[in-house]
Amino acid sequence: MRVAGISIVGWIHTIGCIAALGFGAVNLLAAKGTPRHARRGTGYVVSMVVAMGLSLFIHRFDIPLARGAQPGPSVFGLFHWFTVFALLFTLLGYYAASHQSRAFGAYTHPVAMTLSYYLLLAGLINELFVRVNILRPYAFDMINGKPVFPSHTVRMTHISSDFAFVIILILFCIKVWRYRKVGQKSP
Image (cartoon, rainbow, N blue to C red):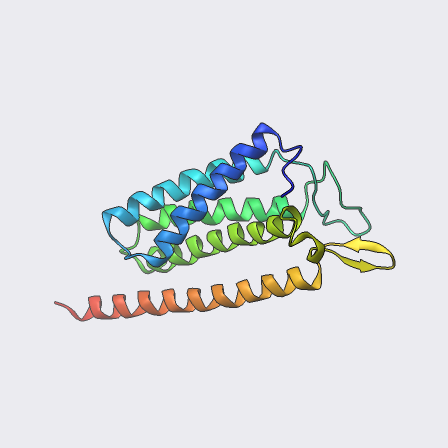
């Protein structure tokens, strides 16, 4: 595993991500609307704010959005924008959690939190392929003698993740719709 050269900011970011992965996974699978769900949700939000906030200060490598610019260090690019979106989804989902009596909050909370978790897992996929020795050979494709990231294997892994999260989003929206439909029928 490649961990040499990770700064203290990088290690705190990593610990925050691991905590968020744990809180998020349990909340994704566990019963919704319980006090435990709310506590784990708060833990998820705090760990995401710490992890994503710190990742904005990590500039070891990024892919620029400007055409013709080269990927590398000191670039605020694609990965940093994913961080911004993960933070926005997390905060929006947290806000919507306390406003679920209205349709906006009822649908926004699970959708925003699921998208936030999706972005967290996308980062994990990239980090695993780049840092874990057994996966690293599959991280890059050689094109014209130059290593190109992401490889076909990484892209296929992301596509599988995308598919799973689309299904999860659909299931959560159906669950909210059914819950709200039943709630509207009661006197």
